[in-house]
Image 1 (spheres, rainbow, N blue to C red):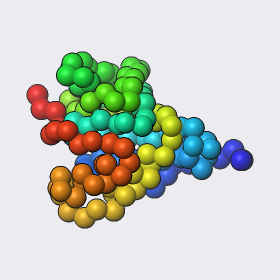
Image 2 (tube, rainbow, N blue to C red; image 1 turned 60 degrees about the vertical axis):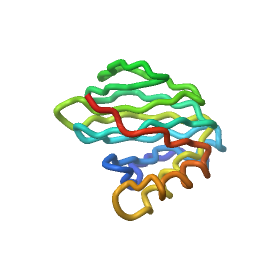
Image 3 (cartoon, rainbow, N blue to C red; image 1 turned 120 degrees about the vertical axis):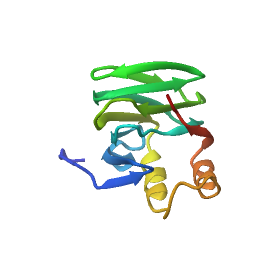
Image 4 (cartoon, rainbow, N blue to C red; image 1 turned 45 degrees about the vertical axis):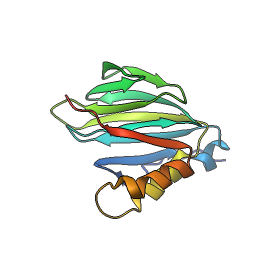
Amino acid sequence: MRAHARRGKPLKIFSDSIYVKLGVEDTGGRYSLLEDVTPAGAGTPLHVHHREDEGFYILEGDYLFEASGKRFEARMGDFVFVPKDTPHRFLNIGQSTGTMLLTLEPGGLEIFFEELAALNGPPDPAMLTPVFEKYGLELLGPPLSI
């Protein structure tokens, strides 16, 4: 493998833009590194990963996380770790776009994001659930609200 710099093409997931920085082809499947750009007021639905541990390093913005039913805020410079099999979701509670680096171990979830980005139309649980299940995830509930 050679050293390289990569911005990555944007994958539109719900209202976020995800950029693959390192994928399974770069790390031999050990981990993936993604950049998540989250508009103000946007976030993820409640979900759980059965294969990957996930880490969130906040580069900019203010986020509200929920993991295992507990809510907490994370700001620039904070790192949030969510072990596999932990239900979680997040919401950008700031007034501007937020950015996080996501680590996923083992790698490969970028393929899930590519498949989600290819779906047309608004998020429909009937269309999302089979894609989630294919990659060892469960869609459990709606996004966070304040």
